[in-house]
Amino acid sequence: MGEKERFEIILEDLNRKMDLLIEGHRTLDQKIDRIADGLRQEMHQMRGELQAEIIGVRDGLRQEMHQMRDGLRQEMHQMRGELQAEIIGVRDGLKEEVHKTREELTEEIKKREEGLKKEISKTRRELGEKIDKISEKLLDHERRIKALENTTP
Image (cartoon, rainbow, N blue to C red; front, side, top):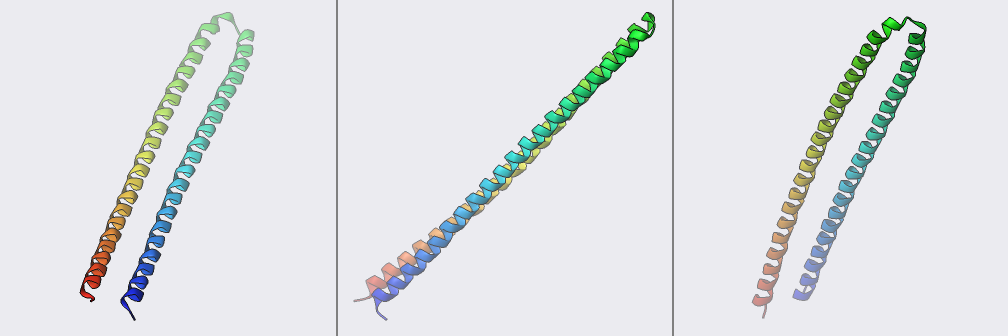
């Protein structure tokens, strides 16, 4: 087998390896995109569920307050002040609870986002290292080929 044929075989092998590397990179990009899309969908769904729940609580509270008001109209005028104070307390408690829940969910979303960012960063770092190793191998192959070419009369 001649030098040219060996050189062609080595080039074909390098081309196959580069194709594999490129395909792996594409696959990883697609995986990262799928993860990001999934997280976006999950956050949108979570937001929709929270909004629906808040609206449901609000509507339920409104309905309950209307019923209370109708009941209060039938009761003595003197009880009105006490019941209003109780309603205000419930409303304030619910506001605090909604605020606390919002803060907890915001913190949880931030933690998940940080974890994903770290995972993506780690994956990118690992890919970079793999690409560097392949580059080193390619340079080594190139040096060997040049050495072989220089030693051949």
